[in-house]
Length: 240
Image 1: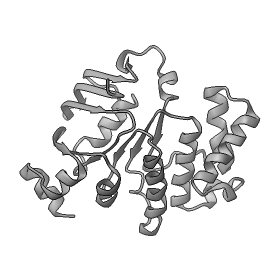
Image 2: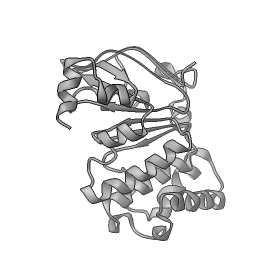
Image 3: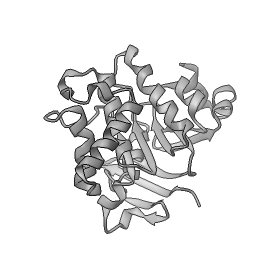
């Protein structure tokens, strides 16, 4: 049984059909990279998995649960980490508080335990020395690493990354990707929407190419990058 199992997902925004019948699954421990042009439906698919967008048609099962009709969306989201392009940190709190507050509010973790766990994961992403820093005073790459630590504090069974490096300066991209590579090595199930083709090639177990709201082609990184079968995939990858 896949950890994520999606059947025939459709999603419209007004007259624009962004997802046109997507079937998609992810096994536990798998790292899947979604690639494709802007507007191909990658981020919308990811947002449907976290129920930030309600699909118009189709089914989404995660952890064996029908999440489209779940009665407790917050309990579900507590098990799914999400890292956005724009970090989505609380700007009125310092780095440590950003990692403590969700544990206390959502998981009901005692504050001291939450603090210890936050420091552990901030250390893991190389941000423990900035625990008391205002998030307004740290770089974009540092903010994204804090966002990853905050997600890890919730001990997610699945991590979703939506273009986690697209808002970063080039020199900060590697510091975030290296953290993600470590998580992949540890066996965390990850779905990553990315334009970083080297990351997809090096880290993914499977690469999925989307175009025009459908999955055009998928395979191992070697299959996708050395021998893509579809002309649209070939044209897209030839630009990298």
